[in-house]
Image 1 (cartoon, rainbow, N blue to C red):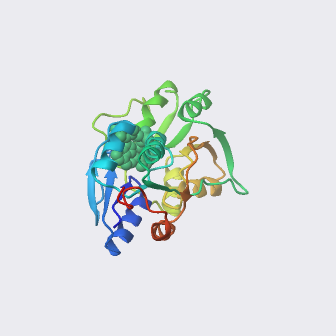
Image 2 (image 1 turned 90 degrees about the vertical axis):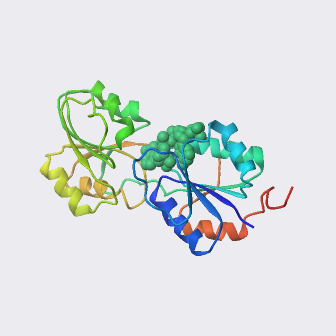
Length: 253
Ligand code: NAP
């Protein structure tokens, strides 16, 4: 019998939750608890951190989890590293569901930076009109470059206003359409887009819109992670579940 722990917080995790429910496979979706109203799900949901690697190990053993599926955002590097380590310690079968990173195409004007700090540093200079498509977690770091006007887009209205002296804030949940993002950039006279390399289609509209409008993009590259098996589509994970070596719990050890 499978008993899945699915680490979520992405639309791919929600898509996989639907497939698991359709197949009647026992599974729990785990959220960090960062958004106020997570989407309702067709499988059991738990919310909140586990308490580091040790807490995750306890959870996996205590709940007799057979398969750990990491479908967190590619920038959730701490959780993903914990998943690798907890799976190693417990022998629970482990796989990652993640979208391939975006790659620059003809017409793209990308500058790569390794992390948020790199993006902040790259913004030194005269005032610009910047679309900061990062979510609310990392926005305060950009207060170090207060000269710019920032266009922000968050899933939830923040409880406190962002600490950026010049900004416009839009509250909206993806996926976003190309036309809408292009119009948004034009309406706000954006001259630079800052984004993480999330991959996938749901967040890609802004990248294509920037290409079409000939706007430069500051691309924050993905964090490095320990070696692990990565699959790109929810269907691939279903196939893996059918064929993955049984984990320690599956073997009744
Ligand atoms: P992170 O830095 O890798 O994780 C920090 C801590 O949050 C983890 O150590 C863990 O706490 C807890 N955590 C993270 N994901 C969790 C999950 N799915 N279930 C239970 N606990 C979780 O992660 P993050 O960048 O803050 O992202 C948090 C959540 O937002 C993730 O679910 C991610 O998929 C989603 N998200 C992130 C981004 C992004 O750009 N980072 C974008 C969209 C969505 P403990 O150590 O206590 O277990």
